[in-house]
Length: 68
Image (cartoon, rainbow, N blue to C red; front, top):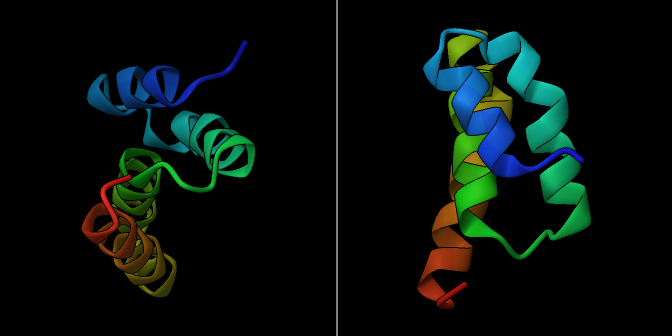
C-alpha cells in the first residue's frame, strides 16, 4: 500500500522521482492532508517544477491554517 510516509522515505533517501507517485496518490486519497501537499511540493521543487511546487506549498499552508 502506498502512503505519504513511503514517499517521504524515498525522498529522504534521494529518490524524489520515485516519491512522486506515492505522494500524488496520498494527496488524491486525502486531499485535506497538509503534510502530503508539503512533501509533494518538495518533490516538485527538487524536480525543478516550480509552479507545481508553489501550488502544493500554497495548498499546504491553506490547510495548515485550517488545522488539517
